[in-house]
Image 1 (cartoon, one colour):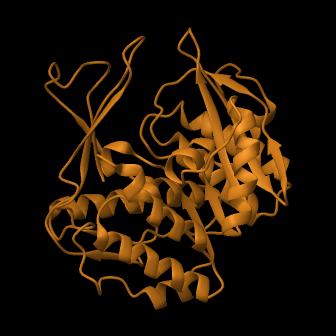
Image 2 (spheres, rainbow, N blue to C red; image 1 turned 30 degrees about the horizontal axis):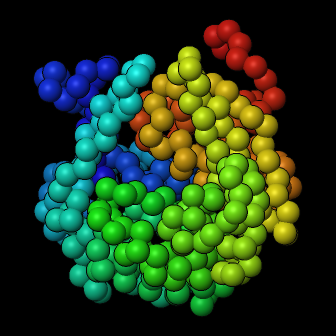
Length: 327
């Protein structure tokens, strides 16, 4: 996708210029994992025009391999970002998504068997799942192929009401259930279980709901790891974040982190990347969830969707307070 950001804290109705970059959950996760020392790929289709050339160049700069990237079509999905300030929240306005090269990719665009044989793990997102039946078929075919070849499937629920529109939860549920049945690692919290999956609970507090519902989801869909975050926005406009991870029938929580926010978009992808890195590197659950929470915290301090921190910078954020300028 193309991100078009209003400078500073102006509204679209005020601004006369926009800053652009290329992003999306797949881009963010692949790039973050590349910075953590893994080889990251993007399975997608971009336009056969200068806009596609610019996107491909940007992906190369982020360290993402072009091996599974296809060219075709004429459009790229875009969104406009207005930064929030004080009582006014940030706002994202999507445009041109359904006509994008990715969303109109023909059935035979991706060689799913070839891709599945050449990767160890694949990440899918609920935002992509919301696009259309064509995209959903691509996703499910690729997930099944990766499972068949012994790879690991990661699914981030990432439900967005504006994408599913009226009656969204009912429309989304069967597709989410199918993806959960294929997934080994899942990013979700209690709200996904209650609203998207329609699971009941008699608990009232968020943490109690989480501890009631997440084990049930893991058991029902035979998921190895479920992870996510709880966030609160404080009166001084700082955010507080606590990560969790459910593995081996046990919950592990990160420390509560409180920090200022420069750019919130993409911080959830940074957390996901931290969980994936910890699992690949065989960290303990505590190390993994602390690493992921610190990676997410750092992502809030960097402009743009894409996490830019190295492993060393994340470990430093886990152990050190903010200091003076590094010289």
